[in-house]
Length: 375
Picture 1: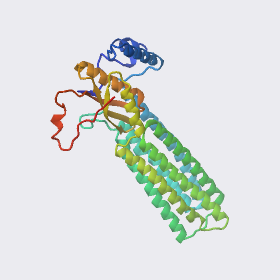
Picture 2: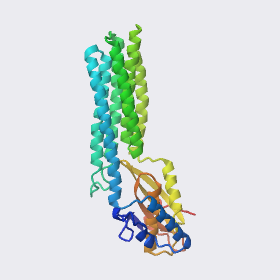
Picture 3: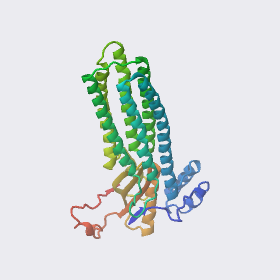
Picture 4: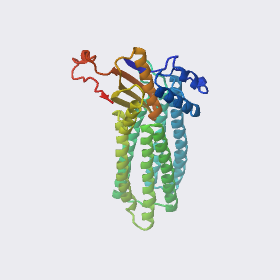
């Protein structure tokens, strides 16, 4: 029996209006366990809800996703403003000094600021409700934006290398070295601040694309640092300092590119932290009435987690009782696993003398039946 995407029927209400009186219906009919231990556990759970009320209704899950999108958008807007100001300052100094290296860095910063556009569109698109064509919603738009960010980092590495080689082949004098140095320092500080802000928010809301964009800002910070170090070398009479440092920074950008590409690749391949899987398994085992667990699968849809899990229940349970255990299992997962918004729970009964209920699936290629571990 599938636990479906438990939207929680009227018998298990968790609406926002119900938050203050959550213990009322919740204690009355939640899971209907008859043992004294189960009643004590429900009492503890009710007290926890009184201290930190919450909801699992579909509308509340959407609200959580919307709040994450709003936080991501806020980060993009603030970082866009900071990088825009940094770019404007550098453009002014480029006009005064004629520094080609600083011009390249200014272009980098402008490009980094503009990556907020596809990411912002992805966050907005991700808010759209699921439909019959996109049944999981539009959260994957973030992963597509992440690909664009990785491409932008790769382009930055190519441009930085090209500028460095060009300067090695055609050395040029730089004027207003103090201003160029100040602009390089400004670019480094601005990009590093934006990088930390984007990465912190991206990890908080579970957005691999925003983390990758933060790493992109860090690469532009390295480029700005190259301008600063290059102008310092030029001031000491080392004309090739600027291009040599530029090549070193290009190598640093390639290392950042590797990290960003790995982050986006893993998200596209439905990779999750094994610790999350272990946490989910532990939560399922803790549910009263669950006597074993099977495979647990998770995937990111944008910056929200979804899960599928098999649980083993006693064979004598009715359909209603088995469904109640599936609801309890999903409830436990949502409580325990960060960023998890929904879980599909499949219930299987303990082995008995009867025929294997999965026999009908045996002829579908190499499709294995569920491997269920009894407690």
